Image (cartoon, rainbow, N blue to C red; front, side):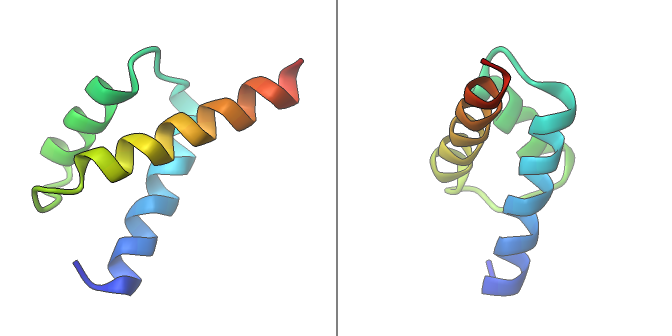
Length: 62
């Protein structure tokens, strides 16, 4: 995955996380990867992005 495309995927996933606030980050990433045809091997990294974003959202709400 090219750097530019990779950053676009991460930013898109962050925005989707802000909108949907998933309960299960792994399942959310798995569905995202399948729906948007992201190359395999990035699920773990993208799951970390979702978990980090959810942590930011939860800390800003408190």
